Figure 1: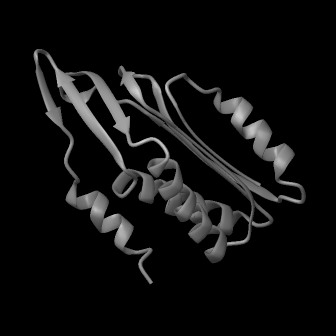
Figure 2: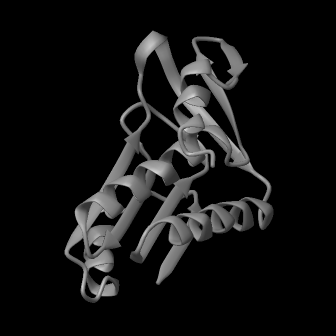
Length: 148
């Protein structure tokens, strides 16, 4: 089972994990990642936007790729949009599998994709200035390991 949600409202990491346990059936492992908005560099807020429909479709395609590469019993991806402040939860990625290595690798693959390729636009605010976030070389380098 897969669930992919793009939403403004916060999510409960514990509830997402519980849902993975319920959906995972014979799972022997669940790996998850929760991303938080950092306040470093004077960041006061981040606003995320997306193209509805296209974004979910793109993320679902990569979830499908993860399913081809690893034996996944269930996965959940929740990504927030809108205005977020330091400390807010921004993303949840969870994968249930029979074995830990598949769960870890699939979760990392999905998170690397979300960080580098998912169609989100991020506007950071520091004081009175706003800047669009550009791709970072180290993020692009980390995703290259998944290219076949």
